[in-house]
Length: 144
Image (cartoon, rainbow, N blue to C red; front, side):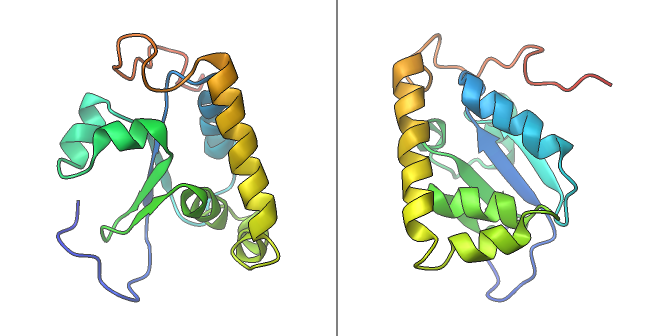
C-alpha cells in the first residue's frame, strides 16, 4: 500500500477486496471483470494471503464484513463509497456513479447496500462461515 494518499492524485488503478465466500460477491466480481474499465480493477479475495501481503496495515477482518476498495495512492473506500468507486471505474457506468454520489442518488445506494447485506445474512455468506479463510478455489476465476 502507498505510504500516504496524495490529495488530488489521479487514481490509476483500484484493488477491490471482495468476499469469496459470498455468491453475490463472486457474481459481482465476475460482472466487474467483464465490464470495460476506465480504471483497471484488480479483484482480490478479502482476508486472503494475497490481500494481507498487499495491504498489511489494513483491518482484514473488517474487509470481510464490508466491501473495501484501495486506490493505487493508498486511498481507502468502504461501504457505499466502495460500490460507487467501482462503478466510477467502469466506462459505461461512470455517469451513474457520479449521480449515485449526490444526495439524490444516496437513497438508492443505501437501499442497494441494505438489500445486499440482507442477502448475505440470509444466504449465510460472510464472516463466521466456513473456515474464516477466503477460499476462492476455481469459483472466482473467469474461464479463458
